[in-house]
Image (cartoon, rainbow, N blue to C red; front, top):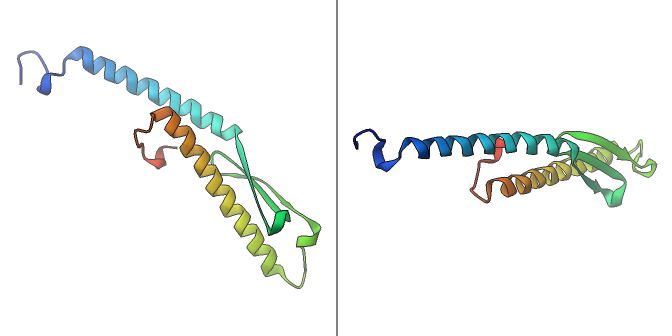
Length: 115
């Protein structure tokens, strides 16, 4: 170790800059997560008879079912339509969150669990 410094030539000024950048990125991530709560995506199935809206936190905020989708003799079809629309809405919400994260990180490849 160099006298009065860190291994690899890192000095205290570089360490302070690194800490400031990390703090700034953390603040930006918190802000982005708050913004994602207000953004929504929509997905539908069965030609639009079932529509699901999810927010950027991957929470389902609305489900719309058209009357023609309700057949008491075929509940399984309605369940399948709802499941398909929910899964697509969550996939779209995940894509939206990843897109926002990549803008923030500049494509640094941050783990998706951070969003």
